[in-house]
Length: 272
Image (cartoon, rainbow, N blue to C red):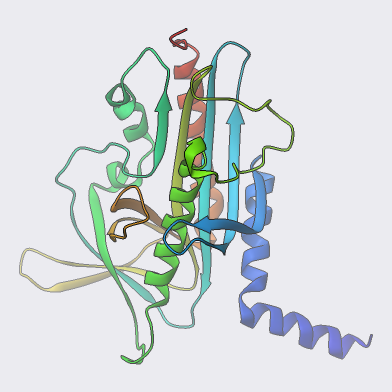
């Protein structure tokens, strides 16, 4: 193959967004996550399989102890125009707003609120996003961010549903790290987190004291997101929007969250 043709193919990969997905997958792997690009999950609403750009996880288990799984389901989007996150001051305490499983343990879910808050973007900035505008988008075009948000949230819901045998949904593969577990025989804590990673400019918009619009460039934003369907277990999610140049810093935050939870669980035990 001639060098000119190779360069054209590479340029096409960069334009298409596949190169962005490759960079994100490598960032997860380099940070010690198990990562599966192009992961398929079962859409609980339509009962068919869909693809999520990035599925990554860390798992911790000791015999006769508590299983911890931390799953990230991310969509990677490339945009030539800026995305603008509308924000307001955060009013409610930070907890966990995404699909999770907590079973057969000797503590209550609220006892984890403080440690989850320590590694939360909304706690870090004291503001929260509530919507996104794709700048200069044709009004007749679909919102890419909204579709990406729904896909990542559906993937998170599907992962949690797999822990309930009556749903007959395959559990995300753990590559032989642990033996098959049941929620009755082991303590289990599973957290899922939907994420959108943007290869493009990310801005924050808010009103100042004079009610003037302020724009500032950002690397990350927490976003409250809601959608309701009959096939999903919840209608409220917390999505992190990450500008691709900030992915390594963000992964350090996630890994720190995982380590803090892991250390905390060592002081607890299953009920039986």
